[in-house]
Length: 162
Length: 433
Ligand SMILES: Cc1cc2nc3c(=O)[nH]c(=O)nc-3n(C[C@H](O)[C@H](O)[C@H](O)COP(=O)(O)O)c2cc1C
Ligand code: FES
Image 1 (cartoon, rainbow over the protein chains, first blue to last red):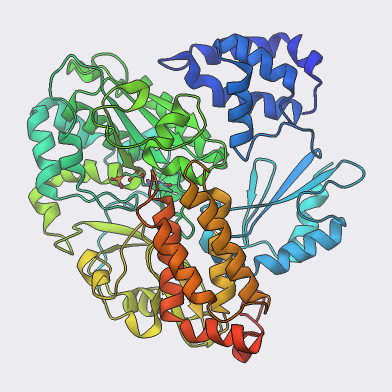
Image 2 (cartoon, rainbow over the protein chains, first blue to last red):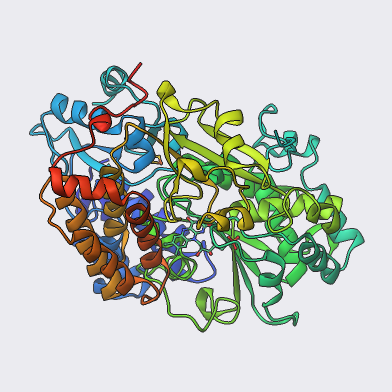
């Protein structure tokens, strides 16, 4: 989950996956998002070294890669907490009680939006409509979606994370 | 109550509906086999045109006509794109299809590919739908195993591949040209049109973009015929739609219904009425980007004609219900914050306009609004509308203008009294009872 740039660049399995992604699409450059997803999940963010590595692999400029990394909300160019909590803030979830849930999470973890707990375990963010508005309030923890989350349920859910 | 006819959800709820074997036991790929073995590409395209199938992604463009804009020759490279970015607030129908009946989507895309001799297809799924992407990936590989994808599909001479691309968190990538840039590994910034995708799309090649639900209708059109389909429900939006009910509604969820269902029936008969047994205050009838309706504007059908009568549109089919406990200023602040955050920043009117709109509405909400703010807001709206590369700017303006025009009193109350209406002090939520 949180490898360093050097560890990642000498990881055979990682390099093999990158090679495979290169051949996945009609044109190599279409693999960029997939490669960034891979790096993001291995490192927890996408370091400059890794951006430069991807740039070489796809024969694109490092500036292009940085432009893409900073455009998309799911990519981070700086380290964050081990686990990312994203609370849906959009209208249907707000009507369901999303603000109550967000306040609870913020108080429980002692952090505000955009902050990381001092032990590096949690980063808290809001996210826009997750396309499950009938089951709000919705949150995502890393890649997992949780719906109809009450404050009490949240307390239970986070027990499974380290 | 409008009669319920199941087309899109007919397999949903059956055992392991996303698996190819179960799907095929319930009719999956029969329409594809019929198209490939008994029909010419022209006949297939004609059925889709006759069906008068309207796009389900928001704009409602006739799908058959759009497909026919692609060059007709067999040689040129052509791409089909399936838009599975589903990010419009209040919209959660494509998720249902992706997770429960991916083979219906694939079958629709492959039939469309046969109709226009497409080279390959892309499904662009929003990055947050990680499990949906896994389900689609598996469905695609199963379709290859059964020879519904690949070279010379079922001996028909059609070669067609489907590629899955995962987005990475950007509403704007649902806009078709931003989506194509994203497929090419670029920032998701919309392109100017013309050239239109039918001439200059993915990798600069002719391309056609349709929504998940649009493609999912095609198998049934081929199975039962375009003319059968065109007679279902509403004349201007035939067939069924997946309406999504959310917000202050007792039974939120997806309802597959004909478009001649009225908004009142949708809310009270299907949705079970208003959460908290409160009065209805407002409804957004087709995803957050369409004009809002007041409680007395719900006796209309959910098709283009019906919603036009009350100044709105069917959009993406996402119906957001607001009861009387909602502060309308706060609701609009929530929406404009969404558009400000999701503006890609290319066009000044959209980037700056959504920012200033948010600041003004936030001020009113905080009790710091001043007389004339509503006029200022409406004037900014005028300066965004129609002045941007893509319709995100317009999409931000439509809720703002309609909220202000229809609930002007409540905005003025905030500005004068520096507080919310008393009945909105405690908003209903699912935690209320
Ligand atoms: C800002 C913006 C976001 C959009 N998001 C989506 C989306 O998430 N899904 C979708 O199908 N269409 C979306 N659209 C509409 C697409 O641009 C396009 O019209 C649609 O995919 C065409 O398919 P259809 O004709 O089958 O509806 C969006 C448009 C705009 C301007
Ligand atoms: S508003 Fe939260 S999932 Fe749609």
